Length: 434
Image: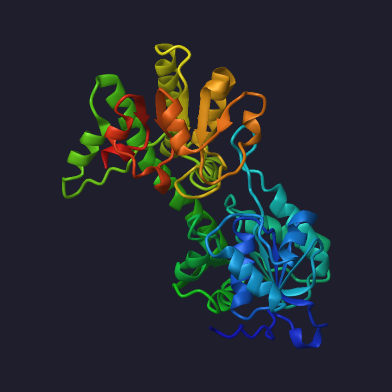
């Protein structure tokens, strides 16, 4: 275990002459990224305060519990709170480091909403002491770190805030370091993965690197904040574009009457071809959202990125229409929908095309719909009043005439075509072909 980084050195100020902060690190936002980050930091010896607007979340964490499902997180949080290295609060303390890990959703017209990041900056500003380092981890449009700098500068005229690229520096450090973790493996990847750390100035980047090097086993790669912000958006846009090709190919295959799974399997035997697997769409709060941030920065130029997003959004509609086609020729049949999460083996339903499809169908199918989702005990709110029932896989297969695979959870992968021989089956994930 690495020892915590020495935080006594200020950026352009004598931090040792300042009042001692309440905590070494304050993590703002205790969601899917903030809570695992806070717990990992505490496990590496840091004194961490997790801050969240939800009193329920704060109470849960202080009791050693978790409000999200993530592998190994419950044990890590329990251990961190028992040692006293992790506490939670609804108010922002003074700290050496502030890490902002709040949501950055899309507005109705697919433009980025950084209101939570701006609110976090306003909450932090009154508590900042000279020598503090503020790091934004929330996925953000290019220029967000500079907007945070402007907010702090406006609220704290007594502190010199660094300007982008200004070598004269400032009394505090500001940097951007996007998370790049996979749900279900967040705790491991927070430590194992390389990190891109962009500062408003080189000195800001170096200060932030000092924190990440205390727990990251991967490389810590320094750059400026604008490049780091762009890198995060490019990573997920690249993946979205490649998925869009697979999804569009699957729709073409439907139209021309060929098996897309055979097409992809055989095409991938070419030494320079690696087509991804299609699905019912793209979900989650990263790939389904981040490309729009890149489009927002260059709306007239980002044509391919925009088209890929539109293709992947349309795939969910295409899948829903295919299912409705099956229902129209088998009146009154029961339908089993397998999976609601946005990807296999997690309980995260954010931006899930499977959930969108199932909720839309439930409005018409009512009690004819049987939902199998091993990562929840209750159906999401969108099913309320429809009559749809959450059930086990065995019960669903016994009762349903139509089976639709929307998510290839491990719990479903033992199924074979012979298990579904007497049923009408639509496998949107190619699970039965593997």
